[in-house]
Structures are given as structure tokens and as C-alpha cells.
Length: 510
Image (cartoon, rainbow, N blue to C red; front, side, top):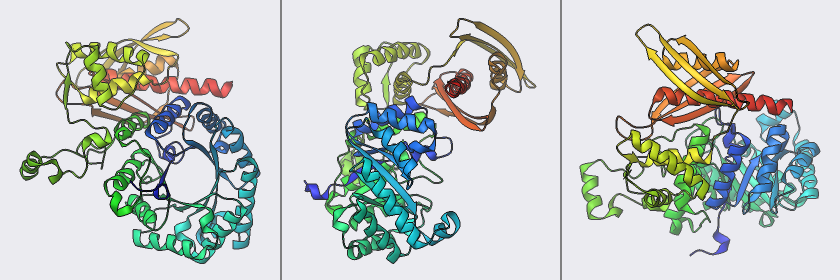
């Protein structure tokens, strides 16, 4: 076991930087679910959002600060008093909280974005840190676009903000421009040329535009960084961020090389990954390292022969280490509560009795439709039980018919005020017809941007997950649902979008 000095803190920014990825926006209840999963995973810091960005962001950060125990709860702010005060108020309920201030430092940002000279940058950065220290002892500073900033000037900024009270200095590769050797040299330069560098923890934040976010983060650790900023599944702006599960398992698997460790409960990586994928509607590629379906699959005859002899021939880590079971075929309609409870635990999910009761009820209903239930089916039931948003409309009835030229759909919806309405519509296909019927009933007509379908398990009776993306009044919304009938899945996903739109309008009117 390595010493405490070699521990690398994991700073998760799924709720802030990750959510900025197109289509990855989350509602406040969804953010809270993810935050609780991150706390259970053992992350050291949760960057819950950017409180000054909008009232909704402020509410989400405040909710996480109030309800999530364990990690440091962090809020992002520009180097302005208004931003910092909003962050401080949002974070106040958290026993451990951090204000993260940032300001761009590269020549291209100074000239084209900020219109500020070097002296102004240093003065503003120092002022931002000092204001943050008025509200919080734990203050992080990020020189945005640090990897494209002149080394000498970057060192001046870092030294000045540490003198002003920054306890963590994060070095971002904001546009994913750097490469591993170059980035390591940047950290070595700072450690050599910043006189007070031992008074702050060095952090790293990498984007994946050139596919090197994990490699760059690991090289920063080799060169002295002791905090990695990352996201579940690597989600984030453009090509994404450093992937939490990949960097954590790299440090664990090669601990003797890096001489560093994290406090992450690695067996909870798989359920956390599936939760974020379900909420954001971002499918995990089959060949995704650590948590992809193929991560521990072996099809080559030579590989299979070696695996039968000894697993270490072609596996450098065990599936159980990341919370992935070897079992594929799980349960059937004759399986009982105990068998299902054990399978849910094996898949890494920890749900209370009320949630499990809902899972078991839906499991029995699904088992009547399917001969065999696979892990993907169980995951879908658990994630559904943990809850999509409840809205004013619920689906009471759906019937469709289709031919070569057109299709019809009859949809019955019930409103929470007691109304039950039915409409019949014609469309290019049954899904299009069902969507039009829902629009006629609710009066909400969003613009459909994207519609996706994917199988959650094996066989012709597999559940199909539908994911719907729409725009409505300059905002993006996403809905998803999974059943054994893809038309029903699509209809429920679209209805979830309609409910989210109506709930959002209510909140804005309040």
C-alpha cells in the first residue's frame, strides 16, 4: 500500500463539464441521483455545476450541497464578485465545500476573448481568489487554456494565485491540444519555477479532442499532479473529458508504476457508468475501455484457449473489479425475490426496499413477455425504478396499424387533474402517428431532432430502448424508455419529453 502522500484525489465534473456535452443536460432530480452515485463511488470532489449560469444551475448545486454527504461539493465561478457570491450561497449547506474560480491565460484568449493584458489577467485572478477566500478556505484556481499559455507567464499566474490563497491549482488542457510528454514537461516546469508550489495541490483537467485526455492526465500524475478532474464515461464538451473509469483503473492496475492510488470503490464503476448513460441518453460504445460490453469479451480462439488456462493471459484486471459479473443469462418468470435481489446486488446496484418492490413487480411483468432475462434487462428495470421525472401526463392506451403508405395510431392519455383524452392520428409510420396523437392531445409540438433505438439484451424478444431528442422554444429536451415493444418505447420516450417541457414551463412561470 502506498502512503497518503501518493494518493490522487478524484475530482468529478460530470455534473458541470460533462453536462455541457450536446444532449447531456440533466434535470435537478437526475443531477441529485448522479451526485449520490458519485458519493457512493468514493470521489473526493463533486463539481456540482456553475451556480451563476442560471437559476436552475444554482438550484441544482444548492440541492447537491444540501443532500449529498461525503465528498467536497464544488461550484464553478468566474473571477467576479457576483459569480463567487452566488457560488458561495449555493454551496453553503455542504459541510465541505470548494469554490473553483477560473480565468483564461493563453495569448489567443487574452487577445480575442478577454481583451486583457498580462498584468490585468494576474490582477483579476488574484482578486478572484481573494474574494473566494472571504467565503471559503478551500479555493481552486484554473488558468483556462493553460496548455497553450506561455510557460513563464503561466508560472507567474500560478505563483500569484497561491500567494492570494488558492489551495488547489488546476492546469487545464482546455481544447485537448497537448500531448503526454509535452504536458509532463509543463508540470515539471511549474514545480521547478513556482517558488510556493508546495503550498497548493496541483490538479489536471484534460479534454479528449485528440484522444489523449487519459494519457495526458496520467503523465501529469507522473510529473506531480495529485488531483485528476474527470467525468463518468468521459462525457463533456466536444470529444469529451478524461474518463474517470479509465484513469482510475489505470492507476489501480499499474499502481507500482505510478506509485499512486485513489479512494474510488472500483466495483461500483459499472453501475455508475450505466446510470449516467441512462440519464444522459449517451450509449456506451461496445469497445469502450473498462465498462463497454466487449471490455472482458474474448472471441478469438487463441484468446479463449489462453483464458481457459489462466485468466491473466488476456485479462489485466478482473471483471469483478469494476462491478461487472461474468454471468450473461440471468433469470426467468419462475425466479423469486431472493434471486432477483442477489442479481441486482451482483450488478452493483444498491436500492432500498420500496425501489426493489417496484423492480420486482416490473420484473414479473417483463418475465411474462420474455423467456429469459439478461443483465441488460435487469439494469433497465433498476434504472427505471430509480426514476425518470414524473409529469402531468401518463399513457393509458396505445394501438397502431400500418401499411406501405401510411400508419395510424390511437393514443389515450390521462392527466393528473383527472382528464382522460384520446386522439387518432395518421403518420408516415406508427411512431410518427403516435407522436402526432400526443401532440394533438397535449398541445405541445416540439421539433424532433433525433430518434434512436437500441437493443438492451439478446434475442428477438429483447427490450428496445428508444431515445428521443427535441427542441422546444430554444431549449433541448431528451426522453427515453425501454419495453419489449419498440413503438411503445418510442411513445413513452416522447411522452417523457412532453412532461419535461410542461414541468419546465411550470417552473419558469412560478
